[in-house]
Image 1: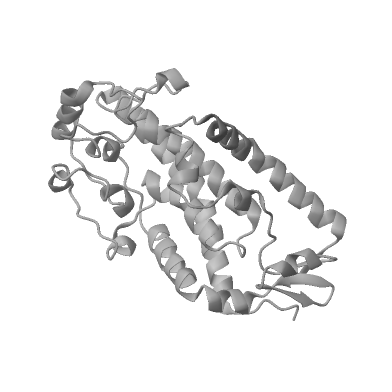
Image 2: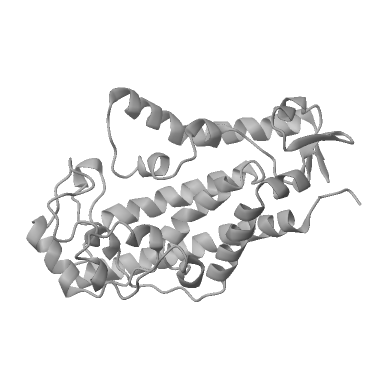
Length: 289
């Protein structure tokens, strides 16, 4: 068990809060103005971790907070020699199903070779042959007919269920796979942009056991990946400062794969850290012995 003095852990808490407020404060300001952002809102709307919880700091298992009685407001903390620490056994019992599923999914994903070259066609498939779009304030770069032509001219091969479930009905048969929630563990692979973004979800699903620095690292990666996701989408977001990655061209597809590969590499150590956390939780109490 690592014991942190009051100055040590409050400094870590304050650094974390300062870091994440660079993301949460602009979100609050946009919300107060009634302003929607097709890239940044995703991190606070599709994902359910509230900004206030993202700002909150937790040390993770195996850390004792000297003078940390304020953490006893959460029932998964307990008094231990030297201060207050996460009650790993209580947390693991309370979240047993979530911990077990997260461990299965992330270890299965990490075991596979990344598949690149989907070119972000999931966003195109979400508007294929439909008059409705998800981001109505922003035009389609190629118009409806041009967007449909790109879907029809490329091989759609999305392996991520939570992207596939938003495909339009005409687009679904065009996908090389038909992912379901039941096949998620079988199909998820580390080259997928959504699998990299979802590391943020799995990090906060295990809150407050996840060290908050790791949650913030996963959020930051998700933000960077989301930018590529939308730059490669059919929407024209150049007015927001997001130049397109035109995946309808050979040059655009090459750029997409280059960035996709870089994000796959960036996601790997975060996935490994989360797997390590689930192993700790599945193993039982952390002690000083």
